[in-house]
Length: 312
Image 1 (cartoon, rainbow, N blue to C red):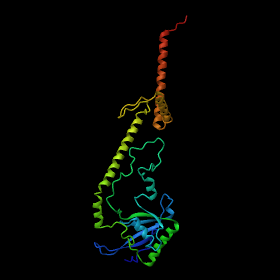
Image 2: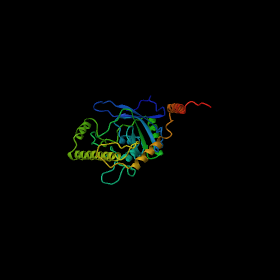
Image 3: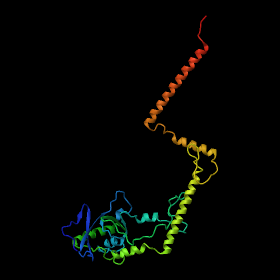
Image 4: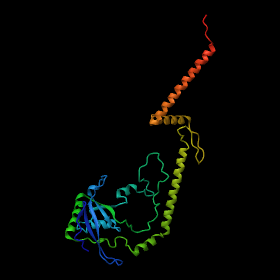
C-alpha cells in the first residue's frame, strides 16, 4: 500500500518512514504504519550515540531481525552494517555481557569480588531462571528503539535512504525477508506457549536442582554473616546476642579500640544543627549557675564555723 501523499516527510526533526502492513486472514485490508527516525541524541552521551538511530513507534511485533532487514536490505543497503538493536526496557549487549552469570565449573567469576568479601545472601546461581513459556516477545504499542550501526557512515547511509524512499513514494513491506526466521504469531504462538508450559522432565529437574543450590548458598552466606556479627561489638562495646550458638568473647583491647573509633567519628557533630548549639549554651549556663550556688553555700558554711568576729 502506497503512503498517503499528504503525509509529511519530516516532523520535529524526525524523518517519517511508512511501512506497508500485509493483509491478514482476520483483517484482509492493507494498512500503513509509520516509524519516526532521527540520529540518536541521548541526554547522557554514550560511546555508540554518534553511530546510532533513534526509532519511535516501532511495531509491537518487532524483533531485532525485523529492524535489521528494514534498515539494510529493504532500504537498498548491504546487510551486516547494524551491530545491534536496543529496544526500550531491555538491556544492551554490553550490559548483558557484564551481568552474565558464570558458567558452572569454569572457576571464573562474572564480576570481581573484593578480597575477603563473602557472597551476599541474594547472590544468584547460574541456571535458576525458569524456562521461557513464550517463543517470541511482543512489545508495547508505540515503543522506541535504538539501532546501533558499525560506524557513522553506515548510519548516515541508512538515514539518507529513508529520505530517498519518501521521494520515490514507496513503502517497504513490514516483515519482508524474515519469513520463517522468527516464530509465527496467531494460533501457532499459543500452541507453542502451551507446549513450553510443560517442559521435559530432565530440563525441569535441572532448574529445580539449580534453585535448591541457590537456596543453600544463600543460607550458608547468611550463616557466615551472622557468625561474623557475633564477634563484632557495637559502639558501646556490647556484643549483640544472635541466633546460632556462642563464640568466644571479644578481646578487651578490640572493644576499647572500637569505642575510641566511634567517639572519633562523632567528633565535630555535636554542634552540627542550630538547636544543638542552643541546647549546649543552655547546659553551660545551667552548669555555671549550679557552680555559683555551690560556691555561695560553701562560703556560708565557712562563716558559720568561724562564728562572729569581735575586735578587741
